Length: 184
Picture 1 (cartoon, helix red, strand yellow):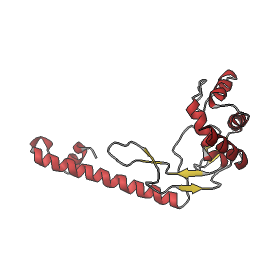
Picture 2 (cartoon, one colour; picture 1 turned 90 degrees about the vertical axis):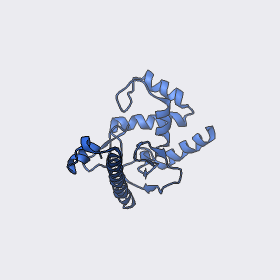
Picture 3 (spheres, helix red, strand yellow; picture 1 turned 120 degrees about the horizontal axis):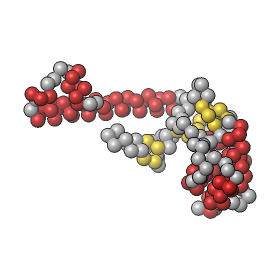
Picture 4 (cartoon, one colour; picture 1 turned 180 degrees about the horizontal axis):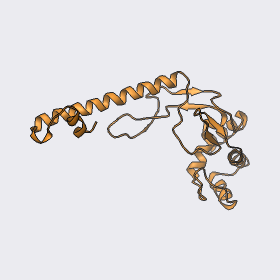
């Protein structure tokens, strides 16, 4: 919470408060922020446990969000996703796939003509393309910094099967994962 706002809410004149009192007000404001952060996290995790998917993205190639927040396939973009998976299974690496997409004028989810190899690599591992959602892959350990950390088992993850329509069939996805594990 903003200390000025807190002082205003509590009717405190910060110009007349000594340093130690100001420190107390700052600590109180920080504690309130921490408490709000924990309450929000609790609500999000309860929603995850109930199987309601939480998708924190606005651009996701192959899908758009429906009015209910569930992913809906965008047919033209789904063809691009299928092409990327197909090219990979044909033996092309992410650099060759990048070159193919750019040479054929195929745009990214954000409409750019230049593809990132890391984006292509992440797409090839993204379980959402087979209709699954794995939630809490990352988390924010410190509400003050707001920096996310990869969840390597510190917190539970939640997998929702058949969360939305798949673009890639499970067999193709598994073949890609097997090939990726051999090349890494």
